[in-house]
Amino acid sequence: MHAVLGVPYVPTPMNVVRTMVELVPFRGSETVYDLGCGDGRLLIAAKKTHPEIRAVGCEIVPTIWLLAVLRRFLSRTDVTLHLRSVFAEDLHDADVLFLYIMPFLIAKLMPKFRRELKTGTVIVCRSFPLPGLEPLTIQTLPWLGSTTSLFLYRWNQSAAKTHT
Image (cartoon, rainbow, N blue to C red; front, side, top):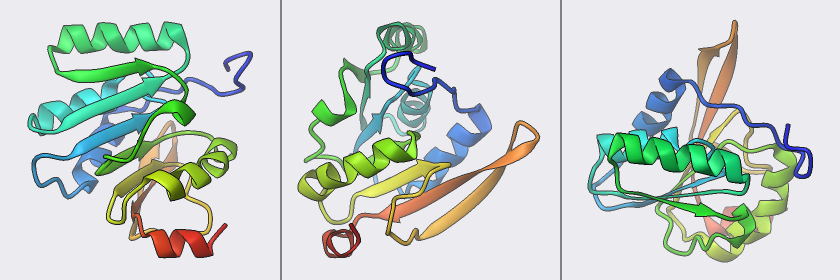
């Protein structure tokens, strides 16, 4: 658990990473964001599977961000990694958004999403759904002797405004 931010670093298992990437109906030239990208494994996997996408991640914990930079270098993938808060990341050009962040942060991010996300942006959330929005799909996967859920959304400004 990060002492100041109160958020844990929990790497996503590769079977979950693969499923998250597979859930997205990629067309070819999407701009993909991972907020709180951790060690970058999800963006690296997405970029390797779909080399034509633009992959952008942000991570606020410097040591974890450096781990992502190292993983990016070793994987030889063109992934952009910002050392910054999820609140500072400009999402106006997002076509796809990956989220594996705590519910209290998702709730704080919802006004930002309403301001910045365009209708049609695909969102894949791991473990924690977007409050007040109905997912298109929920997929459950095994994880550490239990399960984890993936929630797939297509952002709709009007639906998001009615659920605060």
